[in-house]
Length: 593
Image (tube, rainbow, N blue to C red; front, side):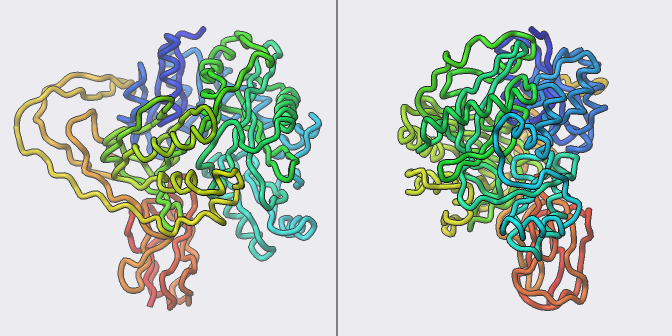
């Protein structure tokens, strides 16, 4: 077993891994960017080292900086979590070249399955059919058009090295193919460092069902059970559950065996997930995620196992302590991803900002995996997952009622979250009857009555001069240390959007939450952005005529691209931004008269 493990990630998943490492008696090493200097995962780790920088590219995707921390800390293994470098074969090779264990699959398996094109080919070799598609990298919109004309519209463009719905665009017609491909490539490059995309048929009403697999270094591979992840918006999951409802057991068994076959076909080791689309009694291989999944806790509840612990033990060379016939699945589990998004009117706009209050639910079989606490800031530069709420019940209805209770008990202020959407889904007759699909949230769920939360009022500081004991973080040679100081009992002022609350010396002044639609009128004819972000592209020029609702610019926030639309028709008289500019919520980017 390892003595020291570095967690090459941040927020909720880093916290999750650190807790299991502590239970195993393993020293945990955290890494952090300038914006995450006092993040929850940093506070919980035994050791923490600065990477510098703010954006993911400057920090959590900086291989050289991470390798330097590995050498300085003496870590024997690296857990990549999910996202960032978790499915990057080059990173895994760089780790193993240092004589350090990568807690994940071999680089060769990541390469085969991390590339969605080669994974389709590998699945076919394993006897598992995929969704009809073109197993080649797209070079132009013309190829998308040709595929659509042959198989019918709409079609789906997907990032070959992506996941989580990022770098995916649904193309309804030929005239939108070129723009959709460019947008998908741009998002894929920023999210995964690779821009390659491919195209496949877009199923009309599928369910997204995935199989959790686990394989050791002795050649043993098992499937633990399936998860239904059909409640999605923008092809990103909102609610996951296990077992899948209204799902025939013969299909379950066949899908589980197919997942094992796909895993063996690529020489897989460690925890992984094989994803399928299920429609009309048939299932199709979609992709394999060569890492731990966000939704792994629902499987843990149902099978009674700690998947992170099993990952660590497998990476240390231990055999699986059970066979396929030993696995028992009991009850039903549901997970809700609480994201910093505003679901008002069904728009699901990113909502970065400072969390001024976070009250977690409690109760039997209720679990909260969070990456943030009171006073922490959810930055525009990273993923918008704030926490995962997971419950277990004796059956699906029992779990559904428990989840509703837990969501109603949860209080988060300072940012908008997806909780109102979760409640709408869980209470809807279609979800209760398991008649939903991956398109159901966006096409049938009515969120028109959901309103944006009120913006928090700035808090006032304390003018007292009494001295109090504070724990303060300092860095020595890049390593984080905590020291004790006696300081005035006053509230610090947050001087910049990226500043954090320190270690408890009062509360930060809350940032305005992002609320509203895809664009806003800060005044007559003024187009304002609804959230913090970076301008990816300006779509109009001075002197252009525009219609109400027409996109004026593309704004990237929390790894997602969002159109900023004109609120009125008229002529563009002023453009105030260019591609690459960083903007804050409410900033006016164009004027229309």
